[in-house]
Length: 249
Ligand code: NDP
Image (cartoon, rainbow, N blue to C red; front, side, top):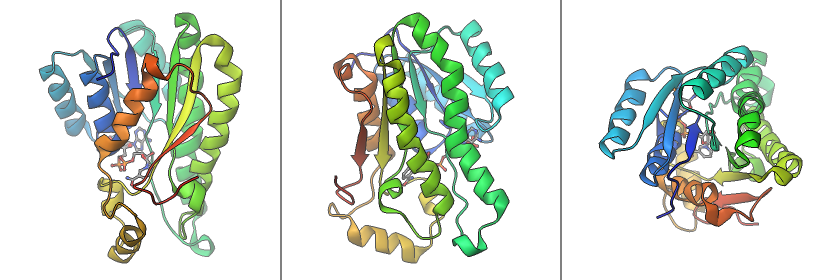
């Protein structure tokens, strides 16, 4: 197990799915965790109880990652209450699928705002703390579809591919500050997000996965733990795939 004791981690969109697993696994490794959520208050509280049962510190922070002003004020509040953030996992995300010809402008905007602009908002607010701490681990959750494309997801694929460019550019900007920036690109992982997929799409995905099954949120979290740890100190600007062999590069 990786040792993250003494580290403070913020995980966006941690009330459910992959973010929940990441927050829980970071806590298991000893980190103090800030659980960000937006609408799933009960689920966020339940996660906080589970983390407390581990004997670890946890804080809840409700804010909309797609709202610049709200992000800035909530991150300031976290710094005052909890302290400087060492580990940031930009995980919050949504889908609003439609073929391009039918895609509504509001659904283009919503997906770009929540999946990509949010990463700029949260990272810009957190970065000064990492510079002060002379340590930082930024892990951005992208997607396999940033590499493969997916019909009906031009908005989502654009956002998740944008995140890769963001990761590589920021890695170069902050490398001299002992801050690493990496991206994790999950494949088909069992969460509420994939539950919404039509059966036809699920079956098509599964038939193409060499490991012949969907992934579990924990299987993404284990990689995040490693990237957040001291053992990953010489890794930056990279993308890591967790997809059962669905896409390889
Ligand atoms: P879920 O739909 O299960 O969970 C999404 C999480 O994001 C929830 O905790 C939700 O919080 C939060 N969230 C959504 N919008 C906002 C917002 N505006 N502000 C703050 N939090 C928000 O998704 P997954 O766990 O499946 O996905 C997590 C990440 O992994 C996403 O970025 C997704 O794109 C990516 N991914 C997922 C894959 C999969 O197969 N599941 C594959 C590849 C990538 P709340 O409920 O409190 O509103």
